[in-house]
Image (cartoon, rainbow, N blue to C red; front, side, top):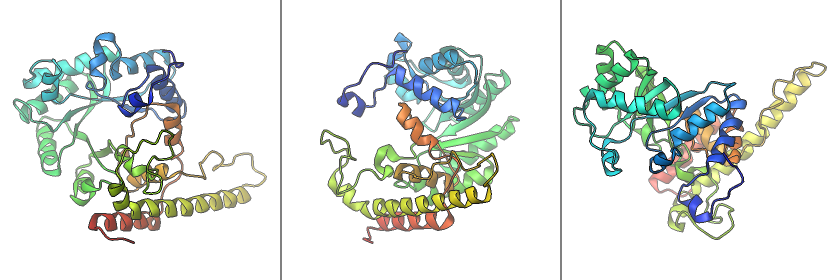
Length: 341
């Protein structure tokens, strides 16, 4: 793919991407040890006829970088959106299997690591979905199965259905971030742990709101052009949280730099320096991502560029302390209650 093209600002705001940028971001992550890739048949589906859907592009990326095998997860499209997009009606267990077969065809592979189905109403749901997922496992089309956007009660029900079919539910992917903690408050994350289900957070930055970049004094997030993605009323409301993120950022930076100096002092004279590659100057975005990790979730941020890939890599090797997490929780609680700190 070519990486020389440029998108207009309005296209970037609309969520468009360039295949060349995606490929470079993919290579950056894989070569740095991040091998789990999450996609969906619905991503870029309007470009499927040109073989430029997200799954098509990922398949090309895999072919062009055969030295490292990624762990690929994909998701069965919302059946009602599939109809609206001209894909026809889906029902029964066979449609689940056929959808995964088509996903594998677009990816250019015989199987994937994880296949997920959404919580949306499905004709024959939930037995048809459970049967379909079981068939996918039996046919070797995937190694594990999961769900997306399921609440704790439906998740438990699906887990029991999979167990009766001799399989297990591996994951549940849902929204969770510093600015959207419903999954924590509702007990969903706790329920995942009880069931041994991996909780994936598919919007760990809440579309940018949880990055800490957009504030009431910097509504553009530092970007040129004067476009404000969030109104000032919302930014004023979350100001206690963005202010605390900056405070925690400073605390974490001081702690990591101190730990690095201490480690270097202990290892003086030795060839290996364990903390040599760990980021000691974290951004508020990285604070937000590691908050999600601290709460027990695996964040899956959307990555379209090398810069975004490098931002994610800067989260590795360090985490937040219990005190730092508590500071963020207290600020988020205040925002939810409408209290000014």
